[in-house]
Length: 213
Length: 213
DNA sequence: CAATACATACCCTAACTTTGTGATATAAAT
DNA sequence: ATTTATATCACAAAGTTAGGGTATGTATTG
Image (cartoon, rainbow over all chains, first blue to last red; front, side, top):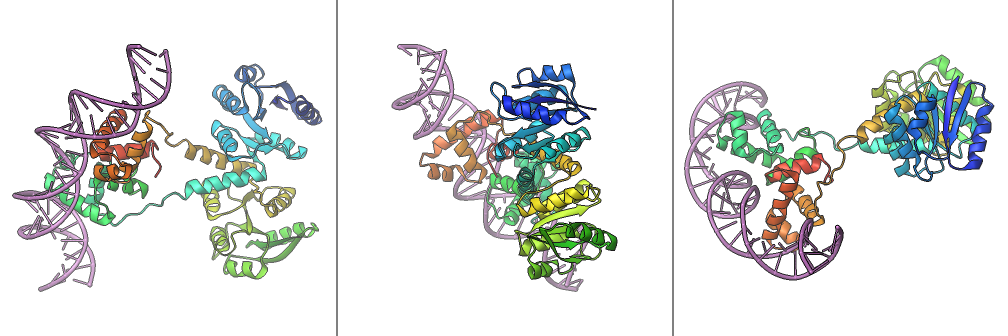
């Protein structure tokens, strides 16, 4: 038996959801609320397996609701249910911890299987939403790839310390060499990176992930 | 009519897929191949709407295949079909440009609707895979969160130019103010960021995403 | 209206950085 | 054996930066 809580402000949609869900023997609807005020309390009272969450609700919206619920009960599976498929709302929801994201135009059968999936720990994402998520994912992954600029080991070390904001003097002290040696290394680093100042070198080093942040 | 191409090395699975797909009137299977050698050529020959792609194939695997296909025909929708649900393979596929990711244990009806989704430009992701994608997405989003350090608008501008490696002189020229003004701003920036040099400021600015790379 | 933050500008000095030109020694590569 | 890349050090000049002041005009806000 999967227990369910619904947050949805519109009366008619609440009724539809109720009808839909009640036809399923393995799903038990515990309660429905028109907004997320005290969502955390409701969760602790009912301890549902799965939550259906509308995004756009008066007073306290669905994204806030997700945060509240996940704060008190991280294992409760939350499926967002919304007419919006704009990137902002989707990503906000995911970051808040939503476990599924269905567009309201999704057919009823999709919703039911999403509930079952959620209770089994899987996530459901509507195709249109999935496309956006995959694109965003790709973007984030294809950042700047690591390049080496063929720095020597020592130069790498010096650049790392420079990136920490160390002065020549401090770098020299750290590496137990003279300050002029550091000057030499930095000269060579600038040549290889094709820059002319420490700030530029640091920016480039971080951009191309020559050093880690 | 949705045209389809299948890349799958195992004979028996190829047969099953063929049977499954042939029952659908709106789907036309154009050809099947046991690996991705010359996948790009095959695509250009058949110009299919959707591709079903196995990951683990001899000679040229599915991830390479996706790259080849997307390189010559970015609008071809590719659904990965695999027994593997390990993070590496999933993320590699997505980065390569896969438009859907189904586990082979997915039931037949899921596959069919995934094909329809794909032809409509939507992505299908199996629940188990979706969970991993969402988790990875959350991780990437929650990197270092943007902080402002309550820099003023002007200070922000100056910091951005500093991050480009500009000297005081160049910044002053760019903003049409005196070099001493820039000095003042930088003094204030250092105080707010709690740093003592340009390299340090740049590192911090990038780390905390005060400025974009 | 007074207080506060902001952007602007100037002065000053010590310290630091950049860049050029050498030089020596060692290890790897040709 | 000779070249090449690396790591080390030195000196010097020119230029830049960091940090200490102070000051003015303009908004914003309590």
